[in-house]
Image (cartoon, rainbow, N blue to C red; front, side, top):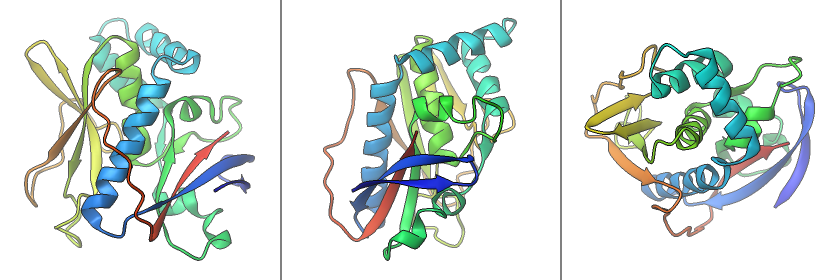
Length: 218
């Protein structure tokens, strides 16, 4: 379903769409990654993302393009939890909202007036970073999911980007990493990589219905 809600964090009324997703943690991750990959593939060559990619390169001309994207996202977006982002929507729905996604081109344009703070959680940072990397010509970009929460060591609880460029594997955790190349310590098992690309990998989306994910856009 789609509706609108005033979001005080952004100071404006936003559209949102609710999608029902599985209550099985592994299926939740796969379904969320599928939606994230779809948004990156749809948005990476949008005018908004292409303009941001050019700006990223212009702002950091003395570093590699991949490093320029990392620095650009770190400067531009502030971390906020899913709970904070979903708070204005949750009172209207009885089921728990477990994920909040802001697609890359909308994260690009939110708060362009300077009257609010552009924010997102790790999956929003990841989608935005991946779209910018595709826009600068990096073809092999992947999502990485890790088990990073000691309270739920069997569940993937964090996501970031890996860029493969030539022989290099470059982690870009723009939501939690202070420098490019840093990765969350693998305390609770091995990470899983999810390839994406303009002609690449997209999981079949199967909605199994119990918990709710929300997508916000302008």
